[in-house]
Amino acid sequence: MKTFAVLALALSTASAFVTKAPLATHQRAASSSAIKMVAEEELGVTPPLGLFDPLGYMETQPQNFERRRAVERKHGRVAMMAVVGMLVHNANLEFPGYLSLPGSPLGTPEGITFASIPDGFSGLFSLPPFGLVQILLFCGIMETAVWPASDYSGNYGTGYPFGDLSDPEERAFKLNIELNQGRAAMLGIFAANLQEGIQGQTLAEHIASGGQILVPGLF
Image 1: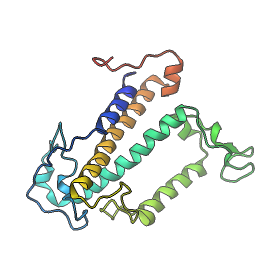
Image 2: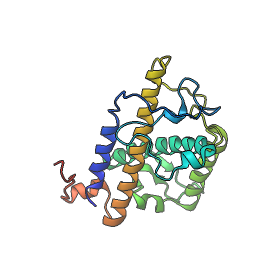
Image 3: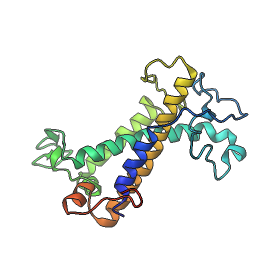
Image 4: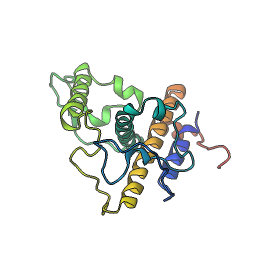
């Protein structure tokens, strides 16, 4: 299990080097809310897997592709933030100040500092009930008002700050990077959580205890 963390990082690093291989051609036209310059069905079809659809949903449920792609894109973005957050916290970098001020009804009488919240699974159970309610409310507002789940474009009015994307080939290349990085991050954060659940140690605790992190066949 101790190999999961580095394996996740290796996957993330490898996915950054997406080659500009010709995109696979599919017959179905891009969905109405997809980015107009790039056929949405062609994004993410990159070496070595190409079109990875083991359950055949592209053929049996083509009408659901738009929603599934939107879900994949959003989950990938959340997972990328989760991986960065995990690495930052395991490096003992914490926000200064209080998460909940002393005497606040949403915390404890003595207050809750950001630094007092443990890393990993235990951090979630260290929050008071009202803290968890705040997280759920925030996620609900984001999903319904700010970045609604019904918006399948992936743009959310913020654009794609990747430079000049007037070239369709360049745009597809950058969006492929985003999708592949998101896929690697989903695997990475899942593996890190699984490792912590089995070992009972965060990544930093595992390293501090002298545990080795190796990828068999690579190191």
